[in-house]
Image 1: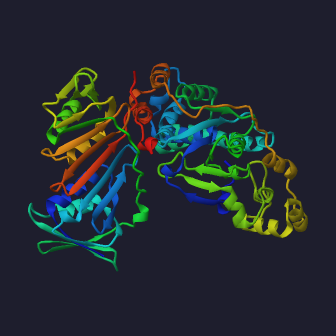
Image 2 (image 1 turned 90 degrees about the vertical axis):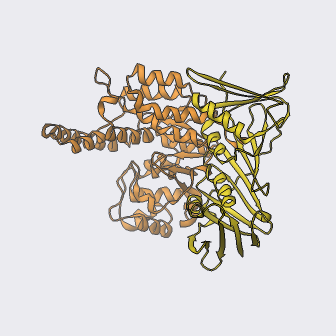
Image 3 (image 1 turned 180 degrees about the vertical axis):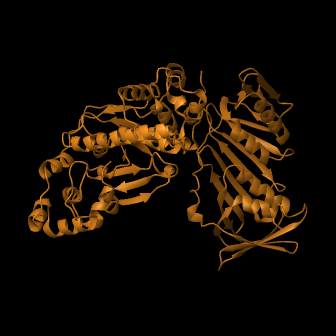
Amino acid sequence: MGNAALRDIAVIEEVPFDEIEGVVAVDAHNWLYRYLTTTVKWTNSDIYTTADGTEVANLVGIVQGLPKFFENDVTPVMVFDGGPSELKEDEIESRREQRRSYEEQLETAREEGDEVAIAQLESRTQRLTPTIQETSRELLRLLDVPIVEAPAEGEAQAAHMVRHGDADYVGSEDYDALLFGAPLTLRQLTSKGDPELMDLEATLEEHDLTLEQLIDAAILIGTDFNEGVSGIGPKTAIKEITEHGDLWSVLEARGDTVEYGDRVRQLFRDPNVTDDYEFETTLDPDLEAAREYVCDEWGVDRDEVARGFERIEESVTQTGLDRWT
Amino acid sequence: MFKAIVSAETLTSALDSVSVLVDECKIHLEEDGLEIRAVDPANVGMVDLSLDAAAFESYEADGGLIGVDLSRLEDIAGMAESGQLIQLELDEETRKLQIQIDGLEYTLALIDPDSIRQEPDIPDLDLPAEVVLEGKDVNRSVTAADMVSDHIALGVEEGDEYFYVDAEGDTDDVHLELTGEDLIDLQVGPAHSLFSLDYLKDMNKAIPKDTEVTLHLGEEFPVKIYFGFAEGQGQVTYMLAPRIQSE
């Protein structure tokens, strides 16, 4: 989720896909979730439901989402979340509660036969079930898309990989990538059209802040891990940090408090990440096996994924002239 | 400054050979003629075109650069009957192109060249085989291959000295051999590459049937297709990247 208020602070510009090259460390849950919700919203559930009622909309989503990377010669590395941070459990709990409420509404909508409401609510009640976790990884493996397992937040791990020079961009919709110190983040990888590039260096420069100060400002506004100080929005947060220097001085001056402020700060400054990863950037997908897995093993309608597989196939067999320049 | 008068055929041939790859392009208005270089968004097919000043009835330019919507300009050129002349004049102030065809005046808004895809670098290719043949034989090869497959192999048999075309479909195959007698010229060298017919079909559309076409080929290398139009005062070079061949 992250905090959308950070958008007002971040330096973001749209860039044409052809200007992007290299490796994108993709926050896999974030990415998958987007495709899961759109697939469920726009596709008849029979297409992605097996005979025994297991839903694998993720497989349809992955086949729709990956061609964009292949066609633009950008290598995706899918970074999966490990266990959630303790602090984030509140957020997860509140999402769970929200989902329960959606599920109740969905029940009502089904009873009333309200098709539109059913479609909308179904997309919101999607979660990454163990089957989704497992089948997503297997399909990615068949398509030779590298997977990295993060010890905690996928986003923090992705940012770490970019800082280390092992990837060129973090791919996430989440503005928190900035706070994890991701130098360059690509947003809207899941939407049509060109992505947005979020630039940490330019953001810090524009507000004349250090990364530590940006984190402090975000804590004042509120993050996934803490409630912000009420009445502090992006503008005030930056003003206060600039004036007082850091989180504690601002809180002291205002007579406010932030619960777990210290730990949240630590979480962004020194997140739980690993150097234990390895991947190849030249991908050699086994399309036959992938098709078999999705359509035969999991019974997804062939037509539904034909175009996506074709696009991947085309992009790996057709060379570009830039290879000779 | 740009002011020129050109026959409808010449302008249409030039535009058509570029529009098979891109929707918009930059046109360099050089003193000695027009130049266009463009690559399709997937970076697979490229065109490099020049139209000498001598191909025009009259031509004056001083090195400007304009951006055009090709289909719009083709539509306008299509208003001219065969043999009619088209007058083009750039209005520097409004950055619009004034086009006149026998009393018909059309003011065409131009596109900011900076908003058009960057012009490609020309690949540095050292292609060992050269095949010179008639446009109609290119057309025959592409049309036959298209009946059975999405791609086409072009190659040269060094021993028996012939140029060949192969297309393998799910059920049917096409094979064509053109020997020295069928060809205008042949320089043998190791050559065999596979190409997408989607691109080659489009390029073929722009190749006049009665013209001399030169193919430069290599092994798993792009093909370079060269031909002239407007009595040799216009030159087009296409480059097409190969497909990776599965064994």
